[in-house]
Length: 300
Image (cartoon, rainbow, N blue to C red; front, side, top):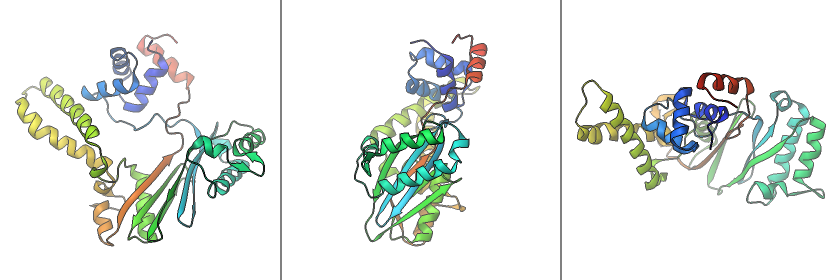
């Protein structure tokens, strides 16, 4: 597979590595994006790593809470201008009203939900014609709680980010604060107990390779056993603290972790959902691709 400006751009967006480093990573890994990311991380070239591709699509995320059920979903359009249009906002609300009471298990089934004799997909298509842009629905999911549990929901920037959390022994105020934290800090797991042994082993190996590479280039390299037994465990611990909700500094009081904040009310997190507009959707930016081609010696 040929290295293209678009692939270089995507890898750069996801890792913040230099363009030429991204080109080398793709060449060394037969254009496999995930392997190229690991390659950059091992060599210490990935400055920051996004969990998904660059946020490029427009639209809104939304949540609807009704009784013991919470619905989260994303509706995409082509421009931010359309996302602020009242017709688009009405369609987003209509989709929520329809799906909160419907039965489905995935996005495809959600699009087939009946709306007064029409599939929801048809309703969206007809409204798309009125709005004047292609509109699509994705990432539809429901969370169900018990009577004893509490929902917390938060919407950032009118729906650019939406989060829903389920608390045990919580109250509305605490749940909303935790949902706000999730929206702001984007954790991957609730706690370390949720991380599989396979993921732990994979991340540890990547961090170990990166540390050994750095050590080999140092003016005064440390013994490898010191790197492996002292430096690597510390970096692994730091990495998982950053992506586990309970270990993160609480957004409203960074002096304590989320776990400590919850301990004040003996609350605990059962689960959470967080979605952000455009995650994983790529939109071609022609001018930037041309810039990449010129600097990396590539042709489109």
